Amino acid sequence: MPAPDRFRPFPTFFLGGFECSTHRRPDGKRLDLIASTRHDTMAEEDYAALARHGIRGARDGARWHLIERIPGQYDWSPVLPLIRAAKKAGVRVAWDLCHYGHPAHVNPMEDGFAEAVARYADAFVRLLAEEEGQPPAICPVNEMSFWSWAGGEVAYFNPGVRHRGGELKGRLVQASVAAMRAARAAVPGTTILSVDPIINVLPKHPEDTDSARAYHDSQWHAWHGLLGQAWPEFGGGPDGFDVMGVNYYWNNQWEREGDAGKTVLMGDPRHRPLRELLHDAWNRFHKPMILAETSIEGTPRAPWLRYVGDEIRAAMRMGIPIGGICLYPVLSHLGWDNDRYCPNGLFEMDIINGRRPVDAPLARELARQIALFDAFDRGEPVLEEPDAGPAFAEAWHRSEAARLSAGAEAERLEAAEPARDTVNERA
Image 1 (cartoon, rainbow, N blue to C red):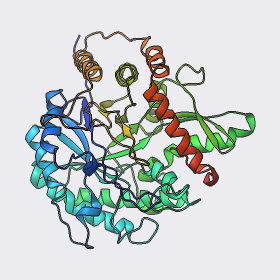
Image 2: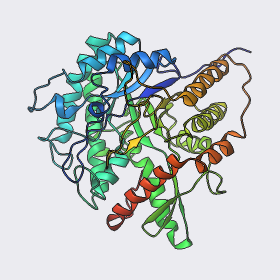
Image 3: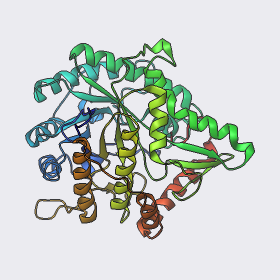
């Protein structure tokens, strides 16, 4: 049987994503996950480690607040070691330009933000083309929907405003469109990745139906804006992005009761398989995809990857062009709120004898999934694994780490509770 044509934007189907958030918390502290994980000083080893595990695609970030400390002046020293380390290891990277953080002299709620992102994109893709020797791949603004909720609805991080999520989302769309246009003008052939979560929001009671539907539908707004189907005044169009990056975690489905939310876990009859959510996204936009983020904490890491791999192959059998799965984060890290250690990566954060420890069960499952997708690409029959979902659900329920993660989610949602409205929750 001949192998079917496949969408493959990276050298390998699996990618590793390095957490690169740089936002400011409500207490004013700026996070820098690249620094706190020491990815900035360990980039060569980190990228070499990806390659050793058969991963030659990645997501990583350029820390804008360090690069443009002075308006219009770009210091590339914070990102050049990462660019060169990835190239040395033979890893193709999709670079996040703005991963929640930005220099102090710009504000996404103020005029001039889109122009600043566009100038930065112009300069950065020129640098990338020179360093990488090919048109680059970039994500101009990461997770516009989540950012609009976190920064514009509940003041969870910058810009720290409430009940203005719709306005912030529009401004982020405007900035992303401007950056896309500037990048393609500077380096024709630049690949534009647009990343946001896919979710399923359900009403708990009939009176919650309209609210749940509004939250559910909000996941599509930013992508519609990039394609010119919303906020047409910002200049989006059919070329607004090339690859749809969808993020999906264990808690991306929840029920809504008034202004509250509770995760709908796998095993609940209302829980929808990932393949169905991917089909919804494909039917709406007909854009090729990658699963841009997925992970879970603790011992369910390997069962979760098994479930995700099975669902992705099922979606591909339905004719959906999916070009990769990104383990995000591939490197465990400290939590945003309280520096709690989050064991959710293929690699643990601590360094022993110059290398990071590997989560052995996840590494074994990754190797198995790589072999399955290679066989799938060759057109060989790869059977579905109907027990993958139940096996993950059982592993989750038995995992103390997952229970702690659920508790952290509950605390975060409870803290945001007074500020919630009908615009954009975790989407």
